[in-house]
Length: 263
Image (cartoon, rainbow, N blue to C red):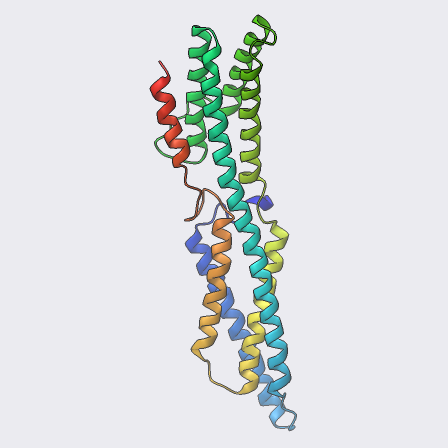
C-alpha cells in the first residue's frame, strides 16, 4: 500500500478498536512477563527492584508522548495547509470567472461554463454527493487552456490578465492536490510510532508486575488515552476518509455563484 494511504481504506472506528486492542495486549503481556519473572526470582531472592524500572518506564512513556505531540503537529500543519489550499483555489477560480468578462461574448460564456463544470468536478473529487461531475479536471483545464490560447492568439497582449488568472487556477489545483494526496505522514513513521506504543505500554505493564500490584484501571486509562490520540492523528491525516475534514462550504458557495452566471 502506498504510504500516503496508510489509513485511507480503514474505517476510523476499526483503527481505534485495533489500536486499543494492541495497547491493552501490550500492557497485559508486559504485566504477565514481570509477574512470572518475579515468581521465579522469588525462590532465589533475586526479585527485580521497582524503583529503577519505574524510572525507565517514565522515560519511555515521556518519549512516546513527545513523538505523539510531534506527529500531531505534522498532521495539524497538513490540515491547515489543506484549508489554505481550498481558499486559494476558490479565490483563483472566482477571479478567473470575473476576468472572463473581458472576452468576446461567446468565448466568455464558454469559459464560465467550463469553470462551473470544473468547480462541480472539485466537489465530486472531495466526495460530496450533491456533485455529479460531467468531465475530469484535466479535461476541463485543457479546454480552459484552449480558450486562453484562442484569446491570446486573437489579441496578443490584450488578455494578459485573463491568461494570468488561468495560470493561477492551474497552480491552485496542483497545490491543493499536493497537500491533500501527497502530504501525509509517511508509513515508516507510523510503523515506528506503533512500535514505540507497544514497547512503552508493555514497559508500563511490566512495571506493574514488578511492583506486585493487581491490574489497575489506570493502565486501561493510559492505553485508551494513547489510542485516542493516535486515532485522532490518523483521522486528521486521512482527508476524505474520517470524521475530521476541511469544510467544503466555500467551494459549494462558489458553485452556486457560478451556476447563477452560467447560461
